[in-house]
Image 1: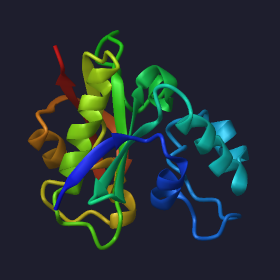
Image 2: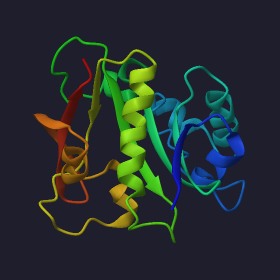
Image 3: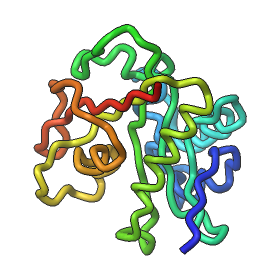
Length: 190
C-alpha cells in the first residue's frame, strides 16, 4: 500500500470523498464547522458543492486527501481555527490566543478502512498546517475510552488516534458527540 497525502486541490477528488450520490442531496460536504451556521443551513443541494469547489481553489485549500496508488481514499479537514466555527464555539474552549489550526474531520472511504489511513491523514494534516506556518494544531475528538463509535459520528476522530499522532489533551469541552465527551487535543509544532 503506497499511501500519499496531498493538499485538497482537486475538486473531483474532494467530491469523491465528501459529495453526495445525488447532486441535489443536502450532505455536509465538511462545511458544518467551516462556515457560519446560518450559511450552512441556507446552502442547499448543489450550492454546497459549489462552495466547496471555491474553497478548494483557495490558498490554503480546506484540507488534505489520501491516495492509495493514485486512488483517492480519504480526507482530513484542516484550516486556521480563525476561519472556522471553532473560533466562536462556546462548547469548545480556547486554551490561549495563539493562531491555532484545527483538524475537525477525518474520513476514509468504505473498503479502505482498517489500514491506518486515518493515522496517515492526521499526520498529513499536521504537516500541511506546519507547511503553512502553523505552530499549534488542535483536534476535538471523542474520548470513547475504547468503546465503539458509530461510523457516522467517527469523523471527529478518537482521543487514541490523536494521542498516537503526538497530540496531548489540553482541555475538556462541553461538547458531546454520539454519547461521548469531546476533548481538546493539541500538538505544538515549534
